[in-house]
Length: 64
Image (cartoon, rainbow, N blue to C red; front, top):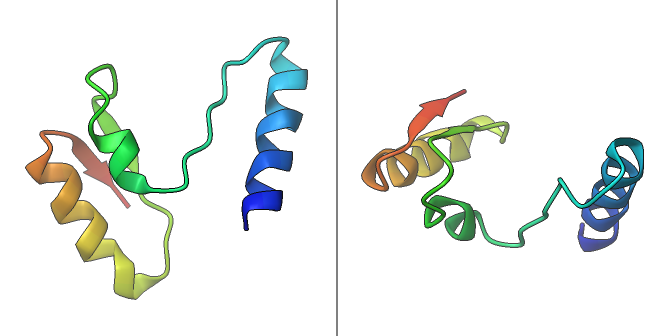
């Protein structure tokens, strides 16, 4: 997964010319960022609730 995640990040950064895309190995790293207001959860069904609850507890809007 790490290899695919990094490859996707590089592809996006090349397309947009910079380092606009950042990848994380742990979703909690995203939740602690104060500049992120909402998250879009695209996980298998059994993980939706876990991630949505964590996002809401962190004060984020959660979309699935």
